[in-house]
Image 1 (cartoon, helix red, strand yellow):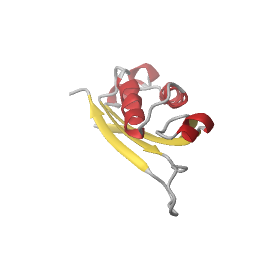
Image 2 (cartoon, rainbow, N blue to C red):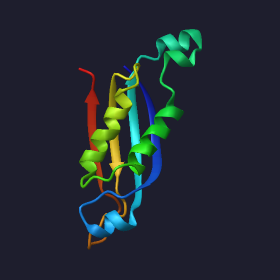
Image 3 (spheres, rainbow, N blue to C red):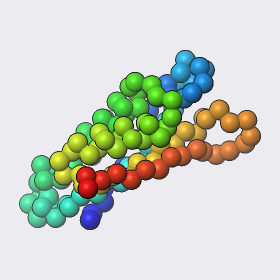
Length: 119
């Protein structure tokens, strides 16, 4: 299976279990790896035979900016389902970064990574 990756998609969302996270919001960063067969697109040099990653990026940002959820696990699942709506995408790996998570000790990042497929 071939891979198309989008790294570092940034959007502001209001996800989290604490009231201040919901009120103030914070930046979330999303990395995607889309699994699909790119051979038909490459053979014909035809965008309609692959996934339009620009559209996927816009849809992922809309999910992050959309309805708040408590957990980034839930956010990752919603993003995965949005990606799998694209006919050519057979599998997706989603990593959601929450670099401003309300943790009281020094840290660089919090991430949740999930993999989902049509199977």
